[in-house]
Image (cartoon, rainbow, N blue to C red):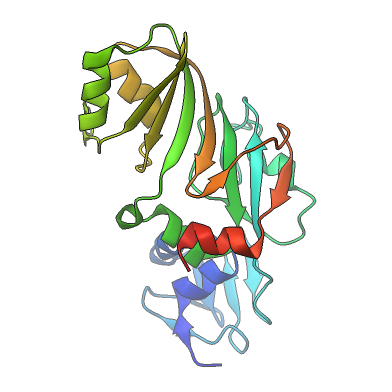
Length: 235
């Protein structure tokens, strides 16, 4: 097998996104054949011994690619491990034998569609800002935005970390609004609605790209079909 960049190999084994793998290498948390690796190193995943602090050893045949969707309940943090001891979304996929991790994040008190994989390239294609993947949320709010507020949201609002991209807004019912965005900033939907005077009391993601949550029960997952994976990435 031809040598490949270390971070690409790590991502292909589901260690983390390629960017996070680069951070692990830069932090000295990765060894190749017993020596601390450097960013830019190339490895042969079959012949070289790759060890990652807190993860273990990689090598052998590339693992089967896993793609699944969970209907995340409230009260769980979106992380593989939590230093504060809070319950994580990994509880719902603990029967999966391969090492997988969530794609992006949902807040602890947000529920809905959350994707998992062990394919780092898949994560890059979905989360890179240039790909403009829509994410659709339903928010319960204390007051609905009026025409003026909706226009602000549709043109982009100024948050403490800069202007947002334009959103799509739909009023669903008294007390509920649907917001479509393609960015992924921390607490973005809640902050956008707060910026126009709407406090969010509950939030649920119902769509990610071409994939809809449908009637998947809360706390349950299902595997994605080959067609769904191709539609998500455009390949």
